[in-house]
Length: 97
Picture 1: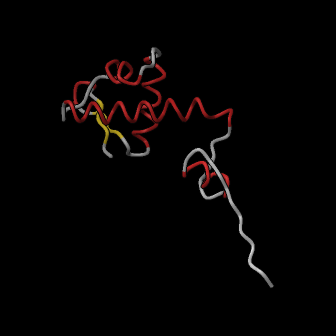
Picture 2: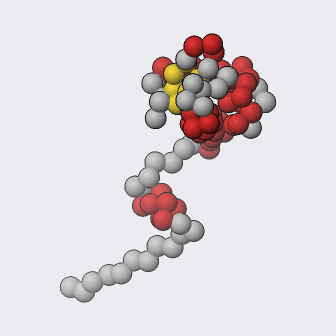
């Protein structure tokens, strides 16, 4: 019996992994939600780098490029529930991870 070769081409390694089913994909209707959560978490990390005490949710919203501060507040509370961010004194938020 002979050997078979398979060639898989993609734009990046993560594309190839996605094609092979090694990397989870996000359903298209949830992509914007996941992107907003990632933006807020990255903004909270930036806040921690700039000031160990953290930043207000308005500043984190600005860092994330999101105009809806109430939505950012909801995302921060969700992230806090999962212990990825924490609320410090005087309404300051900071990433834990």
